[in-house]
Length: 218
Image (cartoon, rainbow, N blue to C red; front, side, top):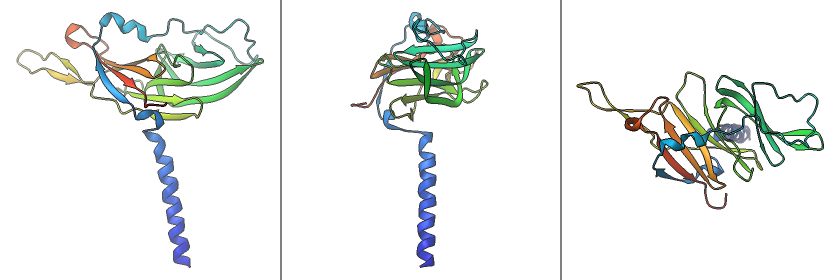
């Protein structure tokens, strides 16, 4: 009997460990398809939000303890508000809340790493978020996470090959370089554009771009 109880305990511990590790990758929104796209350099500005302050609707009466300072990044979609504090070009995490009758109710918090403050977050219908992030400011280990705001489930995408060809020095071969910056934007509610780029580029080191189509029914 003791052996059976011990075996059962070990099984439960293993199951809990597997559940805890499951959130590090994959997810319902991660089973889509990738299609490589042509990149127009003139289109790169479209990845940034036009207004970093919202704008917050005039008929919203926000709680007294909610303030929008000079470095606060705000994005609004319907009754949802995303906000976080900028440190240079990054947000050190952010919060998403719903607004109703002068009150905010938090529905999601992102705390995994640094997020480019100028990126667009909400899908057009406001049901999902996309987040391009790095663990620290000196890292180039870019990640893209999709969030279903109805379930709070995070889906970490497995990015396709995005190496960029660079011209070598005289007598050296051309080299492939990992992107120093990853940019994301929604094409529509079911399609996302993910682009990898060097911070300084030209026609010979053009960014690499892919269309990500969410799994059917998501």
